[in-house]
Length: 193
Image 1 (cartoon, rainbow, N blue to C red):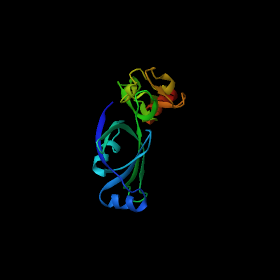
Image 2: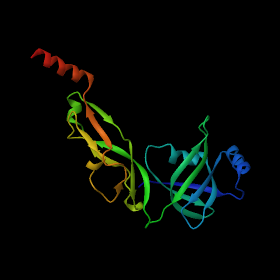
Image 3: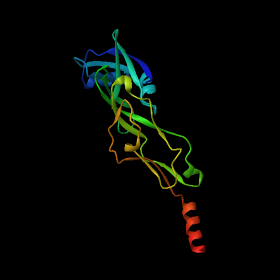
Image 4: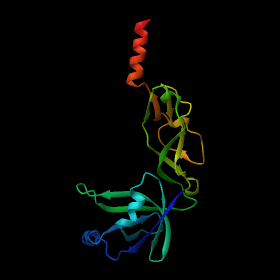
């Protein structure tokens, strides 16, 4: 999986006043969980943009005070009016410990049902995937090359890999429905008989 490097500075004071001061300087207060003890630090907003505002799933390599740690973004909090990033929680990664991440779905191939005039509807854009960090996929690929009009591709239809998809097996990932033009053509053909 792709890794993004981020550097931060340790925080001496933890509290509301210190957090406001950091945001005024263009930094975001952050906490790293999952290790022996929590690590409080500050990161520049511009460094985090590449990791947060992307459709891809990424690992992060965080450097704070000379210490390098592999992590993922667990949660990001935003201001309700200005959408300014207020706080970020990171989860430290360990090679032997499973993690759960939201991984994007990538559709591959061309559907014969869409070529015939069907409408492709993608219901799920991301799936919850649980695995060890080394087995975590960059994307979950779904082949739509055999999907005719009226077909569904569900979570249970995914090929088994080194990871487990924790969404409900009945959840529909993608379907090919009838477009209005195709429905109208069928009703006219039925009337003509």
